[in-house]
Figure 1: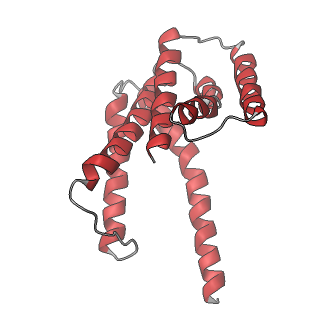
Figure 2: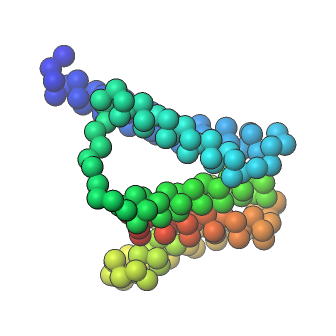
Length: 174
């Protein structure tokens, strides 16, 4: 296999793994929290810890190269993004304690709405009529899909909204 074909195969396998990992982790996290382990921050921490171990292995084996950064770079650039990512996962996992998995997935469709508002507030995007109409369409779709929810919880909705706001903060900081 030529170098280009091997690289393409490797990239496609990586994408396939990424596409499968998200839904699989969602189902595993839901199962863990449903079985009586009501500590979503710890479940999120295990995920972040596994990511750290895996990235360190990639660096140690030479598969990933890290550029040196000036002193204080981690605290000013990496820590806020990492804290936002952790809040996104912790609040997202906490929502499983109050809401159905399918309803949470419906609510996640509202994340682009929150993200657009946050990007606009940060001055990073100009909201065009086309963009506003697209996001409005998503909002209406989420609202309509939410109407039939049997296991509605105001706390669950609030926790999920906090997760989406944390994700918006993470994207703005990136």
